[in-house]
Length: 373
Image 1 (cartoon, rainbow, N blue to C red):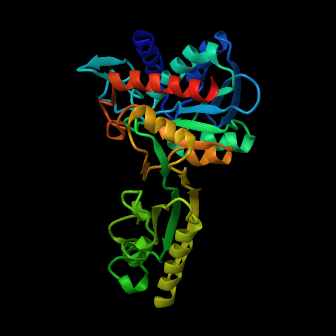
Image 2 (image 1 turned 120 degrees about the vertical axis):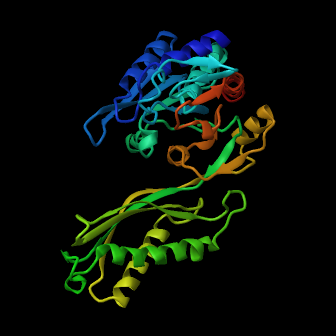
Image 3 (image 1 turned 180 degrees about the vertical axis):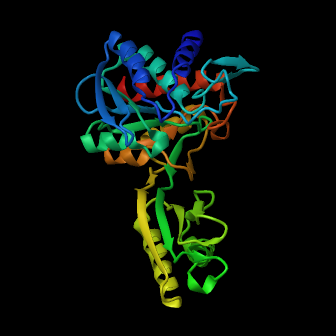
């Protein structure tokens, strides 16, 4: 299995699946392989905001509601121009290097290998789901929810977890804030109103909120155990000698599972209104961009307990987002699992230990046989 598994990973890594590109070449390669082996394949197609063709692939064995789905995203983050051999899988010191070798072509290779090996022994339906645009907001998985495709009882979702089963993740939300002022000559500040200074006053309130009231709700299963808020982007002004008429920033927050994703949005709007009461003429708009719930699978769920037994690793929770919430919407009990370390993903020199890739394939095969055999 080892050589064939690595060969499949090399084939996937060789395809540039950066999210800004079409993922159809990856889907073509997977469908060609799986359909030839007797899997019934279906595509869910869509075009992204730039008009680029994207596709999700559903490949199944058996009829009826699948007992288990293995879910992997086909897209990767951009490649640094200095990493000239990013699309050529290489091996050094027991590690396999290449874009997607960790996040998350490695899970797809393991899932396909495991499903092919187990196929002849299945008596209950199995589903493989390969999605687009996870890195751009789980858009492919959201398309499946909209199309009502991909329903299943349980889902193992591929992400680099070091083979630790992840039973929950926080939500992920974004909003754009535009603070408006009045332009003017910087030599005469009282004749205008600085949108940047106004934004700074709102940002100070947001920082105090993030370090205070936002932390009132806690869940000790997470690290950090409270919701978080970040302002990662800010821009404003036209020139050094012009009073800025506009300042824009993006607020990101990660609610705990079960929390209303709109709660922080309402608090941002409340703080905006507080600024307006303190300063007549203060004006700012708040536009939500993404409002994704988290998910929280009980530690006693059978798919979580199976992976914990099989790997010898207790289930954990993570702060980063996954496609788990979308699989919940499709009726699944989800758990996130896969080879590799998240710290090795999204960077030049992305890699996965070969031993973890091989172990992942064996664990997934065992899961398929346990739930579908």
